[in-house]
Amino acid sequence: MFGLGWLEVGLIALAAVLLFGPKKLPELGASLGKSLRGFKEELQDAAEEDSAED
Image (cartoon, rainbow, N blue to C red; front, top):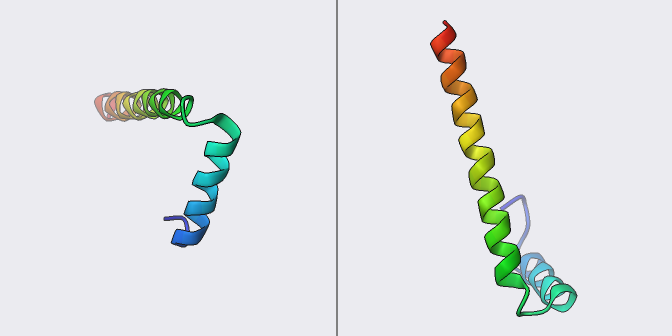
């Protein structure tokens, strides 16, 4: 996972909880997931358009 060990991942998670609070983290995760899903769909659409042009 990007060359990070479990200790580093744990520290990042702890910092996120301290910064945003436990109530806000699920909302942030959901919005991040939606953003990544949309980005992935756009990449697939662009790839399909490129292959259709050939």
